Image (tube, rainbow, N blue to C red; front, side, top):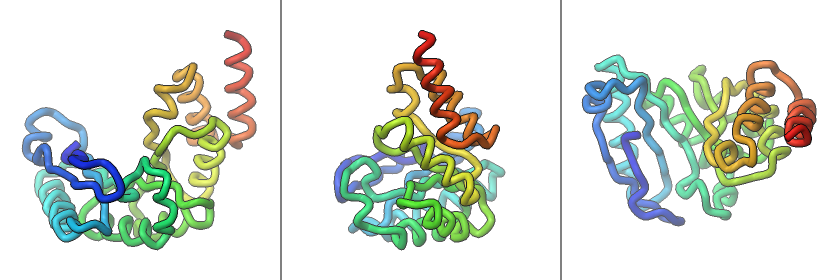
Length: 194
């Protein structure tokens, strides 16, 4: 992780905490940069994105760009609309990302627009705030149908009563291409067996 939020909230300030060369020396497999646009520091963010993209290209380090809402965990992010995410995804693609992680925009059709904006780069769906199992699996199914290659989910797995079962349910949707409903049934059966 090359960045951290120094001021979470509606107008976050993103701080650089490491450089690509440092990640490479440390044996990292990839670097991640959180990209928030639309704030007073947007120009700095775009410059940082370009610097990281260039350094990763030069050093052969895979680059995962998190093209997300400026405050991914506040309840007001959807107000920004898909256009915000489209611009963010496209900038990440053009400035050197190898993989783009982005938020759920509200529908599979809108997620397909984000996949198209990624210009052929793989996209993964961000897990975001804590949501129900059904919502998470349904979003993931629609994202996969729209062209996503996977997910980047944290709290919706590690805060689940059975993290292993939740990870397995996501694997069923992503790798095995099960419907969310079928994966949810298996998840329910695993919970009943405990």
